Image 1: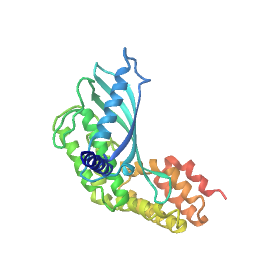
Image 2: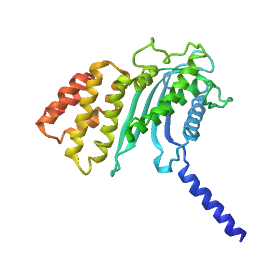
Image 3: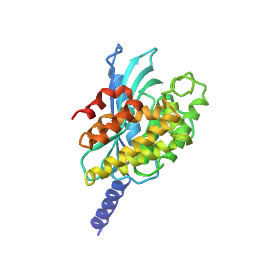
Image 4: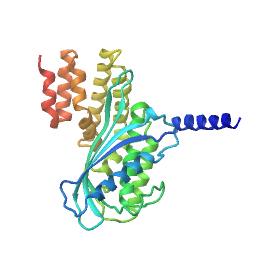
Amino acid sequence: MLKYVFTLVISFFLAYSSVTAQELQCEVIINDDQVTVTDKRVFRDMQRDIFNFINNQRWTSTAYKQEERIQARMLITITSVPTIGNYTATVQVLSARPVYGTGYETTVLSFFDKDWAFEYNDAQPLQFSENSYTSQLASLLTFYSYLIIGLDNDSFSRLGGSAMYDRATNVLNNVAAQNLNAPGWKAFEDTRNRYWLLTNLQDPQIEPFRTAVYNYFRQGMDIFISKPADARTNILKAIRSIQQVAQRRPGTAIIRSFFDAKSDEIVSVFKGGAPADKQTVYSILSELDPTNITKYQVLLQR
């Protein structure tokens, strides 16, 4: 009898764990080639602590199955060590989600943040707090965790990420309250920093962009395997909507980030499309995303 009860308890625990996994499965890579320090083991410890902070924290009350965890990656390049325990870095933040009915992972977020400055001491654990400031590094990791989850939610549900953007705003406000000279958190520093990335996502005038992103994924990529022509039509509509937003608000950080993530995929989607659609897509993207114009020229080839 005791063995039977024990088996039931273990089975319940395993079943419960399978539906209460953390939201993120984030790979963390630290490149320390640009700096010279006596003992580079600190960067291995840093990588471990960042990995554990992101992947072991429950960021929402939503139950995620293990296979539903959001795939993400942080590529952290240490650029300087001004003083012992203080670091500056650039970070490429990436996330992806599966396309329905396929084994393909489509990129959701690709953002290059050149303004990380933080303290790290391997003897002091990173602490998460929903409503208060604990450290610069914890704030950066919490901010991007919320942002990744919010963007993922937006891709599955129209405006589904709003609650996570509100939480990211709390992080931004908590940092601002410290009056720190920490880059990347302020409006006047740059038009493409993390402040503007979040502000864009909460701007009512840019809200149609979020709807377009939802349509791109749910009515475009998620039906591509079964209805490629309809998928291309819906993706083109989404791109037109993004064009309208960009004309109202040129140079927005979130639109730049979107095309950093999607340029290669858009080319792949439309390479097999009708010539008229390829010409239309090329014309729009040459206006919206001139940085990647060479990629889009493939669409003009016969």
